[in-house]
Length: 300
Image 1 (spheres, helix red, strand yellow):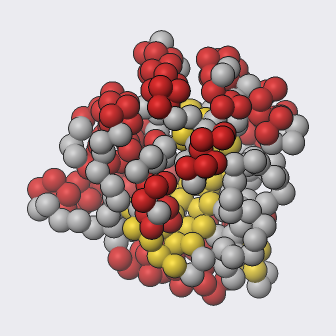
Image 2: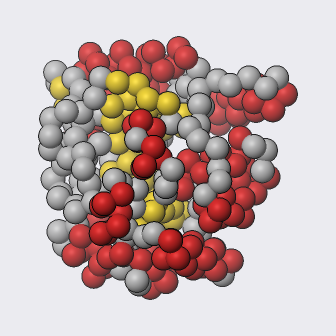
Image 3: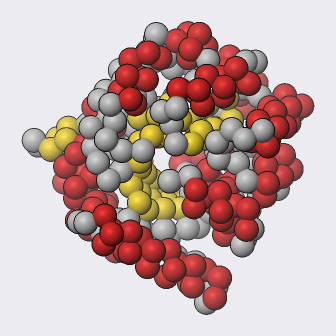
């Protein structure tokens, strides 16, 4: 599809969703997250959904899930894993999934990847995990920093950096943001606070004043001009932890099950301390907060 035609289709989709949300007060799904596999070539300490086989989908399942999601109203899609670039089934690979999603009519498609494989798809946004400075990232992600940057440099599509903030990566946050921005390779920088079972968060994550401190540091970096995806509305909501969840406009499919918002919605201990900043940003945009709406529009 021509770039201009795709842009027009995207614009119409946004207008339709905004009218349903703010004018007619309808709740309709819009963002679909597909956990396509859990096969992964890395072994990050905080990841609980890798190489178990529980989330691996075959071609027929993927096509059926995407078709059903589009039929329910979804127009934005995030594909994640595991490592989705490793997915293959019945002769199909991740590029075929992206092509099918575009044929259905999805207007915004992102692939969340560890970046250790070539980023050779077009008409997609890649979200690549960079867990801190080169030193911190390499300690967590098996010395992959330089290889990832090379793949990002050769990418045919926009690439967003994503940091999972834990005790291991938060200490040198300012250095990490500076390093990532200085590469000039990433359109934006997004983040998640390590979100997991309470015992894992207590051991590896950020709690209490640690959590507030890292949010304040992120906001200062944002104010200094770094391209961090963080609106004023989302910053305040994350700090107060008072944003409304689950978000009914988001659905996630994993392990033969469809969840509203996130698979952690069934675990109150995890959900009440959610650190998925993208969800908070969306929640604030759905409340009509201008700063969050603008931030999401720039985040593509």
